[in-house]
Image (cartoon, rainbow, N blue to C red; front, side):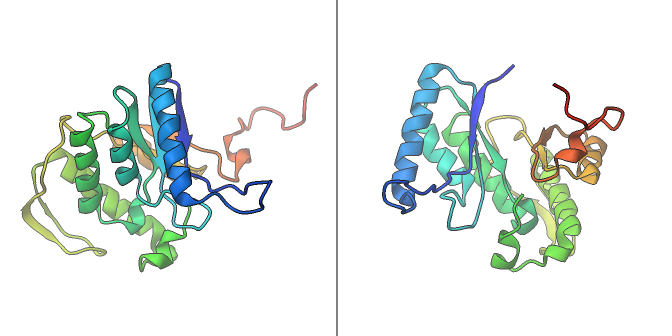
Amino acid sequence: MEIGIFTFGELTVDPATGRSIDPAVRMREFIDLVKLADEAGLDVLGVGEHHRPDFAIASPAVVLAAVSQATSRIRLTSTVTVLSTADPVRVFEDFTALDLVSNGRGAYTESFPLLGNDLNDYDELFEEKLGLLLQLNSSERVTWSGKHRPALSNAGVYPRPVQAQLPVWIAVGGTPSSVERAGRLGLPLYLAILGHPERFVDPRRSLSPRW
C-alpha cells in the first residue's frame, strides 16, 4: 500500500476576508506542505491540471519539477493531464524533463475551447493522442500520422527519461468505455468518482441504506 497526497491547488476563499488565496501564496504553501510530506515518509504526491480561476495549477510538470528540488524521496505524478487538448510530444518531453531533474521520481473540460479543440471530438482526440504518447514512450524514433496534429516521420524525441519508460496511467471518472480502453491497452487505471457514484455500485447489491 502507498499513502500520498493528491491536489489540484484549489484557491479556496479565506472566510475572514472573503477573498481567494493568492496563487503565489498557494504555491509557496503547497511546496512547504510537500516538504513536510516528504519528511514524514509519505509515498507519492499528485497534482492535477486545470485552466480555471479557482485552481493554481495549469502545468503539473512545471510544478512537480519545482517540488522535486525541495524534496528527496517522495514520488511525483500528475493526477490530471488533459491529453485530449495537449500535444503528446510536448507532454512526453515535459514529463521526461521532470523525470531527469527528479532522478526518476517522476477531467475537466475547460481546456477544450481555451486550446482550440471541440469537446465533441473528445473520444477521438484522446484515443489518437494516447496512441501517439504510448508510441513515443516505447520508441526513440517514431513514424506516425493522425487527424489532430502534424504527422511524424522517423522523428526522434529527446531527451529520453531516466526510467526505461515513463509510467502512464489512464484516469477515469466513471465512464465504462474508458475503463474498457485501459484494459484493452494494458494500462494501469486510476479511478475517481466525478459526479456519477452510481457507476461504482455493484448492481447485485441494494442501493437502500443499511443501518
